[in-house]
Length: 160
Image 1 (cartoon, rainbow, N blue to C red):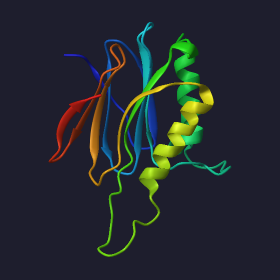
Image 2: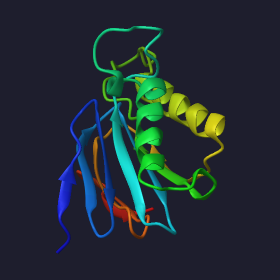
Image 3: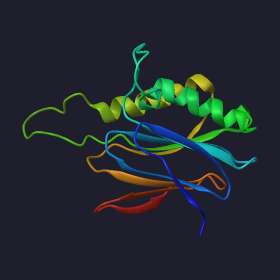
Image 4: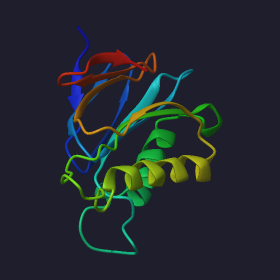
């Protein structure tokens, strides 16, 4: 069994094969996973909000724009080649709704869009995504193979 590194909320971690990265409790948050398939290194971030909006205080790992920069920097420092990087993501659910009312804030959708914008900005292809819906997710990412296992209550498990 491979060792598992847990990524907390508003956190990110990097790893090398054969380690696995795990984050739980993805509701409207996004779990973004990036790896270099040749070098077998990568990372995962558990992003809570789309943008820091220039905020200098607090935790930069909380926001898609600032966290992705940190994650990318650390993966490249491990020797990864930016031109080989690939990404997968999960989460971005609409966790709360009220009967007869349109969804408010749409944080999940906004988080997914912000992560996609960061990937495009850096020229990193998004190979797969499991986003949206109204249910939480737990994800396991194998940085060696790039396999992302997505588990949900009442929706089973799938590999993307």
